[in-house]
Length: 589
Image 1 (cartoon, rainbow, N blue to C red):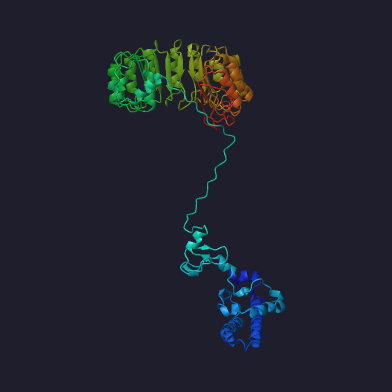
Image 2: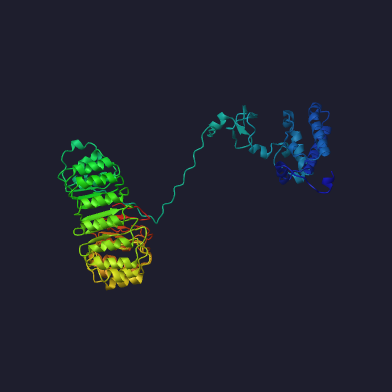
């Protein structure tokens, strides 16, 4: 009681807070009950003789009401007691018209502060909280529609008014309690307006391509093919190698004693025994190219020393198992080598190169030592002995870069006859190689590859092309040189634009749109172009190149060009070229 006198309240339940918001407090409840008791007492006194039986029936509810009032006053306010239902009102009391009239008059006269539209006392009616909350499962309720008792379950549905509905009544009203809730409809993502429509042009295959595909599909049934002929043999080899279907059983399709050249683009599945057999079944070949030949061993090379006596041109990709003694024995048995091109042979050393030069110095015209781990300045001196005959030189992608001085000395010796030069990956080379090695010594070059030379500058390359007296180049590879920009491209096009068939300036991120637009006007014979990561490339530049070079252009690469969307297709530009790298759409031609 002291807490109430001090106006201090403890924690209350949610129901207590709700009743307080509805102006239902212990004080108002006590006042309302007292007024009701006075009204009932007055009516019972005036009609004591006429309605004695009624008084007997009403005595017990009044006593219970008084006991509740006294209990409430003694224990304080308890919110849980407010949820208890009052004793049901008898039919006689409902039928008494005089009592209900007296009750309404008493409300108007004595309880103007608590006017209510309902005939029953709001406190004795079912609370709003109870009508909205479903009773516990298993409890018995009376249906608000048919007034039949039913057991409450999780499928019980509330009626529009107070109460709940049984399952049959709920179905009659159109509410199926057992109906599964439909999954929420997924919202479709709005299409990106920046993306263009995917275009795909289907072309009818030629009869030759259909035959090649059939052969490659049924390559294991080689006995039924008979003699195919050498005309489409290389195309069939490409298709089979692309599928990695070439093995020791079906490779015999490409063998023959009359073969003078043999090209296999993927011999990964050919064992050393099969590679030895290759030499015995093709004894007259003079040109051999094998890609992905990682299973070539010393035993295979020693076998070829005797089985391939006429071999003069050899190109191998990945013979990393062959040791130096096997290479030396092969060179000594083939003193007429004209072309020797290998890639990724880490055991090829300086002694192997010296043996090759000493045995084939009079015939060797093409030399390729790409990705040779031991390549250094010492290798360049023996190569210089090929002066006057060497036309093809590839010493790219070494483990350690050669120096400017050694490269300039080599170019001074062999540069006058070179038509192909690849110095890519020598990261220590500078503009001095262009100014003192290439510029004064090379005048017949057709293909120049200087990729991944980070020390080259835009001014140095521009000056080189502006002063070079070489014939127009047909292929230029200057990719991965981020310092090169507008000036280099302008002078390059001025020098070789009319003869270019292949242009690779991948990674020239700062080249201007104006310089890029000159490609379409000055290089109209392009067949392949790589403009990857040139940030200013857009649809207008690509469209102009496609329109200008549509007769020859076969491949365009534009990886990393975020401004390209492929809108030239919707504008009506048609091309046979394959376009790779469109970021905002995938276009297949």
